[in-house]
Amino acid sequence: MEICWGDVEANLQRLSERFSDDLGCDIILLPEMFAVGSLMTRKNSSETRSLFEKTALYWERICSAMTVWARRQNALVMGSAVCSEGDKLYNRMIAAMPDGGYLFYDKRHCFTTSGENEYITSGNRRQIFEFRGLKVATFICYDLRFPVWSRNREKYDLAVYVANWPTSRRDVWMTLLKARAVENQCYVAGVNCVGTDVDGLHYSGDSMLVDARGCIVASASPDNEEILKAEINIEQLSTLREKFPVLNDMDEFAIKI
Image 1 (cartoon, rainbow, N blue to C red):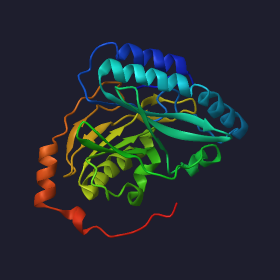
Image 2 (image 1 turned 180 degrees about the horizontal axis):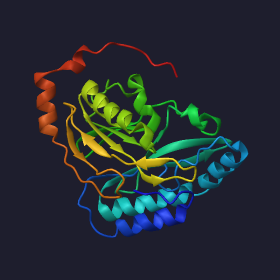
Image 3 (image 1 turned 60 degrees about the vertical axis):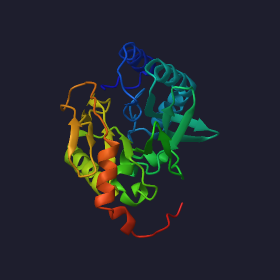
Image 4 (image 1 turned 90 degrees about the vertical axis):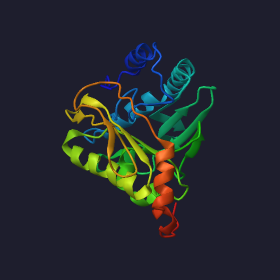
């Protein structure tokens, strides 16, 4: 989607219109910070902090809207937004269930190059859950660069990466999505925004679903806002894992939190 940068109500209204018709999907994925955009600039730290805090005030409104969409579509709806707890802010993935329930994941790797770590607190746990027979793992943007955090020790079926990933690094985005799929022997869905943000950064989208062999199942055309639909074949994935059980040979390690 093309995000209306900094305008929560406009983004929620546009998405509500999109979700007025039945999309016929089990899982619906939205970009990182879909309701507002990344809002990260180091030109004025106090202004950036203020923008994040202002956005966090919409947390309940965003969660409520996602619950409505999930029920209307009878689907799992996922995307991230800013959440505040005390004096801490989190870039939090929301997994809104059609029965009204929620699951959350806080972005582990904050993008230090743009100063995200100055405003956002890093998460300390992964979120892996089952939905309609599919085991799903959740990640946000910069997490994609860190294979240890994504390592498939739980044999999840689908890794979801929601992002605001700029065009200048689009080749990296596409390469790493394939790499995470192959090394973790799973499907990988990468969902990015399109358009240009308030600081002039351009986003080409390149949203896609990649299978466990690293083949692109479906991909969005660059620079265009569109709804991309794709199917996951669990039987095919199970067969691949049985015939070529590479996950059984992975190295053991512990992650320091």
